[in-house]
Length: 179
Image 1 (cartoon, one colour):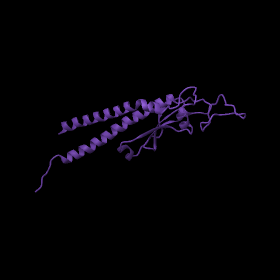
Image 2 (cartoon, helix red, strand yellow):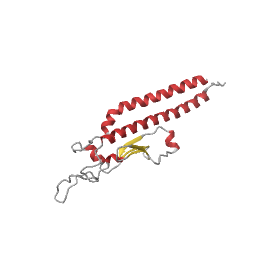
Image 3 (cartoon, one colour):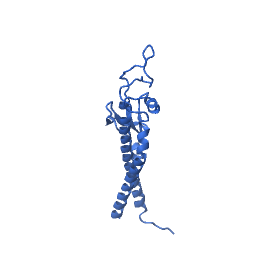
Image 4 (cartoon, helix red, strand yellow):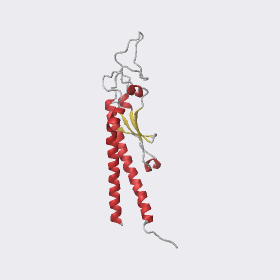
């Protein structure tokens, strides 16, 4: 004896399509959140001019006195958003503008799955400037990446969930209409 259940093939097909659309929605929402985080972090990052060398140490003259002016720091221009640990999606320039990366091709496999984005700064002294709250900055501050992340985390989560629900509702209505 056999039983044939009608609609299982359509259900499986619709489930795969829904998963692809949900992945795309979540990836788009997560990318928007990463770009917003980078923009806020760049705004809070210490200014271009400072008194530090490439390792984050105070610059001193031959007598050991701290150098008063130096134009070596480029922290605001070193922000990046990276997809799946390999593809640069956006970069900040030294004026603090966020720009799409010049080469922004992702593999088909990257685009099929839900992606994650790393937001950070790629100078050798970025971490030191971020972590040392005792440093005095002319403009900007320490904790320039984590502060906006803490402030925006729940907003990002809510928006991603809202976008995913909207996609599911849209696809559910579409499937009901087609059946």
